[in-house]
Length: 113
Image (cartoon, rainbow, N blue to C red; front, side, top):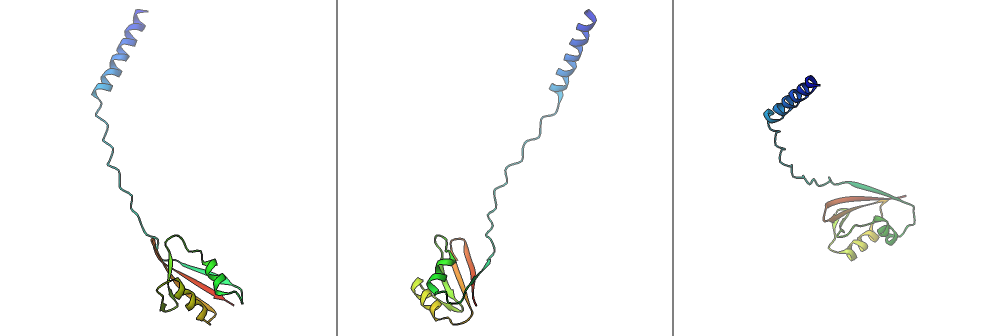
């Protein structure tokens, strides 16, 4: 019995020695601040059937909050009314729209066939 107690006290002492003499844990590195990357300008293609009115196409584009059409084809437009008039005036099989918003600029290509 005395032998087991001596062995237990010796092992406890050795554990205590290693705990006290162990080097301190390295400090955690400072947190890295998040990097906000703006998504590159993406092109959305909207394929519509022939005979679809420009008003219906405008509803299909789905503008997010704060977005507006800034160009129809090569023609810059100042407001939504001018964008609607320019969309009605396009007679091609496609309409190229540039949309500006808080997250940047994006393009929408409307194919009519």
